[in-house]
Image (tube, rainbow, N blue to C red; front, top):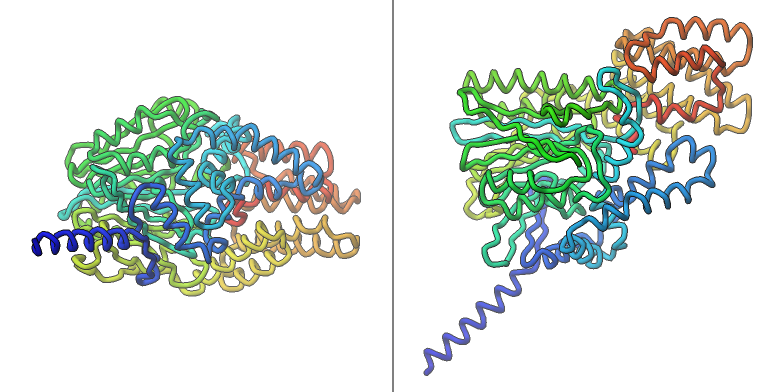
Length: 589
């Protein structure tokens, strides 16, 4: 009898201790926030919310919640006509955001609600964050879908600029990825790895590499079955306001798929709102594929079975269905994706051929300058067979994570049995001055896009130019920032002085051996500045500048030059610069 009573007591203690153990935990490990969540999906969401409640406004959640509204407010039309802001935002919410919110699975609604409620954060804003990737895709497609990819185009729409590769090694698959986006300095402020421990019978644990405040495992994640999934933005003009938002589908893959074919089945049968490339790999089966998706459906590009196999992906499409409707947001983005792909493809082939597939080589490749963009907000290398994930942490505030240290963490969250691996930096990190210059450029982005402080942004860019005098882009962007700010000055003398300062900087950038593309942009805006002076002599010189612009880069550039030759450009129109010509690497929205 006593033994039976003791057994009941022991069972009770075990149950109560398990209940207490179900509460989530948050610790910091070598600069990475480590979160463990337990229970049902809604319980885990509520735990995340409670754990970050006191720092919720510092996380990436407010950025993604308000991104679309902030992007619209930054357009020159809204700045010139503020009364249009409310009806424009209401129309976008009604026509795009709310339909996509309704397209979220019911359980995802409950998860976001539980997360926001526990964090003391507005539920509606949390819903916005859950669909912002596809709202952005719909708006981008609506604005730019007529831009033929062979022509290219200019534009300031924000875009994910991701680079990934998967290749076999002696210790299993190596799956590396960069996440590049305009939320730099926000997303990468709190790099996090979240271990989800569901208690539903038959459910598997899974791990998200993310940032505090981003609860989804649909961006970059791995699971107990050895599957790794991550997304890339592509530009295919097949969008829908009723398709399932992408991160709901990819999180379903990481939650429910136990093998490669199950993952492909989920991806091939889902309905999509926007165009994306989903990179999925299976460590146990030594298989990998890119699934290119849009509202038209899904097509699979699988890693070949031949010797020397590997898989590479950036931000353009390859499959016939997607290529038919591919478009370009801007010239530099169109070109850059293909340049990153060519570099990754060449290096991955060489790594595979020579057997140089160790983790250091993977880190060096994913951190390579042309691959790790300025707006790199996350870099990660998965080594599933070694139960390891290397997550990059910036070594200098406001610099790219890829240029910092890669911290090793267990893929399954079990630190007790994890054979600790050393932190690994890039073998040849950039010069300290270059990293500081990039940090200043990121700060300029925040000043311009979050606070509208274009003069302050120009000052930061000029500090960056002093650190990297051979790089004309800093000076060019400072000039354009001054031009953008000048119409807002009420005093004519101050306005003319600021635009004259901008022209001086354009000349400096022109003398610093810019690329042919940047030289054409400089010529265009030198002409526009001269036009704004309003004299016959200045108009003659402006026409000369327009004649020197290389208009072969894109149709929009040809149209801009033709319009400026037809009629002089006015100073009030300088506000259009942000939308038309400032590169997305500077302006986050």
